[in-house]
Amino acid sequence: MKRLRLGVNIDHVATIRNARGGSHPDPVRAAGLAARAGADGITAHLREDRRHISDDDITRLSRDIPLPLNLEMAATPEMLDIALRHRPAAACIVPEKRKEITTEGGLDVVSDMDRLGNFVADLGAAGCRVSLFIDPEFDQLHAACKIGAPVVELHTGSYCGAVSESDREAELARIVESAAVAERLGLECHAGHGLTFETVAPVAAITSLTELNIGHFLVGEAIFGGLESSIRRMRGLMDKARSHGLGIRTA
Ligand code: PXP
Image 1: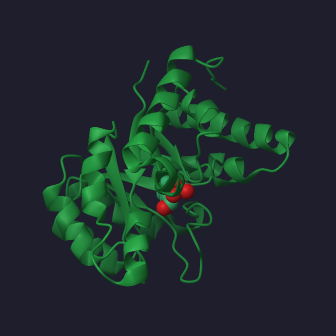
Image 2: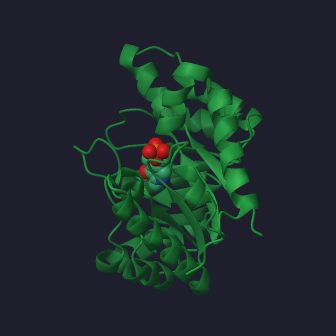
């Protein structure tokens, strides 16, 4: 069975730091703790408005941490330039709207194939493992495959935000089926957004997935029990779901 990697997103450590404009808490220190607690990678989103992660954070995360960096970035010339300068191990292209509180939906790859294809090619040529953040929809998966993306990350926000049990089941089914289609297309498949201790297990049990990226909940939970402890518990829940299979899911 494929091992499930955990990418810890440390954006909101920077959010807390920026609330006071100083240097504490430092996301680079958080990345070191995440490594000790069982994370396989660190994810950071450099936004156009620099509301959390800064350019200097990216420089230090590229240089000073013991784990591969996954740079989340909008498909803009500015971000491409920065990515090509730092050459992170991975780059995840996300849609970005100036006023959104968080990444609201997946990329529309279907309507933007030529432009996104150029970003995939340029980042791939620089040695980055490129992923496209998409909603769990078949046409988006096929478009991602057509433009040569090696990896897709499925947006789990609708699943995590579903209020009724039946909606949550329906959203989970979309993720399960999309992960199976991604695997058939030869795409490496990741997932993330909004995952918590309560919602992670059914997603972690999807055997076609190879990586989950989780941030806001882990940083929030760190207030109560510490960052290492929140990451260790998440890692444990992921491993348990994988090993118990939770009714191993394939479409
Ligand atoms: N994956 C992607 C592509 C994201 O944009 C985010 C949020 O920055 C996450 C995963 C992590 O989401 P959360 O912070 O809700 O765990």
